[in-house]
Image (cartoon, rainbow, N blue to C red; front, side):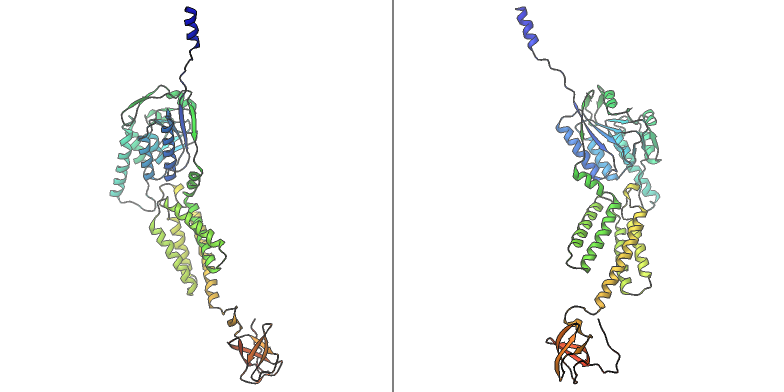
Length: 431
């Protein structure tokens, strides 16, 4: 009986606790709507697979405040604990990134990283003291609302906003702005294993991250494409190129390709600008620039209207996107190059189009008027003449002998109305 009992115990399967999973997201760009979409998708997938935590590797210069607010809300409401890790070495959590770092359940940084410099910026103008104070108070109150709940240093966090203070990883650790410093993902997960944390909603949980398998979620093709399109310089170049191609289609109808490609580029540009904070006064400057360039082509202003139009276009493109950081603004080199090139090319094409409309038609019956020919038969009053290498029936009010030159003055029912050219008159030619 004893041997049978031992045999049954040995035959029983042994169950060991399997390591959990940690979802890894790489946020290595500006903070804008596509970043929010990527993080939300990662948080949802982590919840679906019941992951132990979500690890967001962060390296960003900052971004849009409204998008930052939405991403902070998603992190605070996440069903899965969120770890924000500024990595690898040399990375930063600048401006908006500092808010994401402080919103996390676990805030960590790699050696050689920094975070902070989060003062709100309004590009293209100076706020009056009252509005500046309101913006600063609103932003710091937003930061305090979750920094205090995470039991972190609210005074140091506010200093990053009010005085644009930035901290190294050791300074942030000493000031209780982050939880720990770790060299890599695995060291970080091993260090927080078994740590009991209090979630933002007040519930407590113990992290089981030692030997956890890492599930990396990469951006989808759509997210990668849209992320590239949030580059305001690319949006401006698409807008300029698309506008020129559409204008080319209007002047050379039937080519189809320039019009279709230009429409596509303009639509992509408008979609891209829709994701960014656009300054509508700059849009008015761009429209005014186009009007001035067209007026220059119609009226001889000796380049005054063209110069004014090009300057309006350059300044309009330069201030088109009201981004809080340089990465979300149109570079001066892009605005000057695109604006000047568009101004010169548009002026050239408009002048060609107006000149072409003023010129006499070179196709059809009307193109024959004014041409000279040679009588092939006596015209008394009708006969055949050779005009532009073609034989035509012609009528003349005066008799014309064969070989004499005539000039076409009109067309009636496919019969040319011609006048005899006197021998002593200068020869009239029109080719």
